[in-house]
Length: 355
Image (tube, rainbow, N blue to C red; front, side):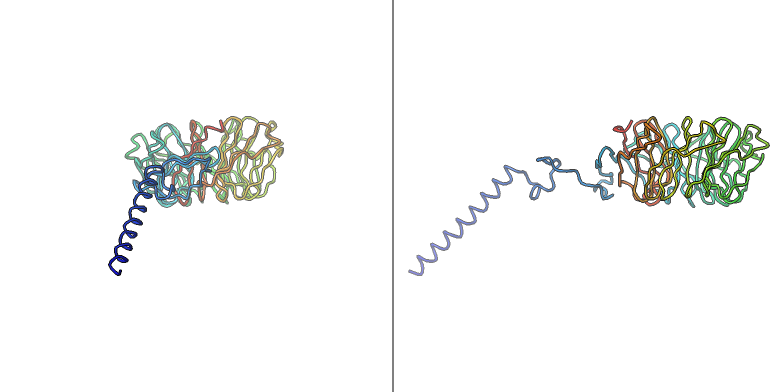
C-alpha cells in the first residue's frame, strides 16, 4: 500500500513538473523572453512613452525619449556648461572654470570633444571668423584662435572688471561688464584688443547689437544705447523689468529673459521709446533664441520652454521639456536645439515639430 502511494505521489510530482515546463515553453513561444513583457524593444496597446531619467544604456549612448514634440538625441558631459554658440559643425561652450570647450556636432547623436583651452571663468562665448570671444569674468575678454579647432589658443586679451557676456559685430566686441556697465572693445587686431569707450549701467548681464543700437539686459531692465558714434555711446531709451538676464533682438522686437518673471517682449520700432507689449511667466528664465515664429527659452527650473510668438502681444506656451536639469544657454541650428546645461554639459534636442 505504501509503495503504491509513493508511486502515485511520484507520478503526480512529475506531472506537475511537465505541466510547468510546458507552460513556460508556451509563454516564451507566444510572448518572447522579455521578463514579463517589460523589457521588449517595442510596446503595444498605445503605451505612453516615459520621461527620460537621464540614464544611459550599457553601451554609453543616451536613450532617445520623446516628451511631447521634443526628442533627446545627443549628450556629452562638460564641467559646468554656462553658454553656447553654434558655428558650422562645432559647438563652442563657455564651461566656467574649465574655459572654452569645442565640441564636434557633425553627428548630433554622437557629439565629441575636439579641443579646449583654459581660461579664468568662462561665462559667455561668441564666434566670428577664426576667433572665439570669451567673457571671462574677472579675466576680462579673452580672444581665442580657433583656426584649428583641435588646438585652440589664447591670441589676445583685455582685462575688464567682470565680463559676463559678449557680442561681436564687425571690428568691435561689446562686453557686458556687470557693475561696470558696457565696454566697447576694438578687436580689429585680435592679438591687441583695446578699449574704445564704455557706458555705465546698473548691472549689465547681457548685450545684443542691431543696427546702430546696443540693447542691454540690465539688472533694472532694458537699456538702449546709441552706438552710431562708437567713441561716444549714450543711453537713449530704457524700460524697467524685474531682473533682466538675457536679451535677443528679432526685427522690431526685443525678447528679454526676466528671471522668475519669464519672458518679456518689447517693441523697439522706436528704439528710444521701447514698450513692453507681451509677456509669459516661467520659473527661472535664462538664455533664449528666436527662430521664425518661436522663442526657445532655457529655463533652469522648467527646462526648455517653447513659445509661439506669432502674435508678440499674445505669446503662447506650446511645450516644456524636462530633458534638461539646469539649462542656462541655448542656440538653434537646423532642426536641433543645443543646450548648455550646468549639471549635464551639452544636450542636443530635436525641435522639428516647432519650426
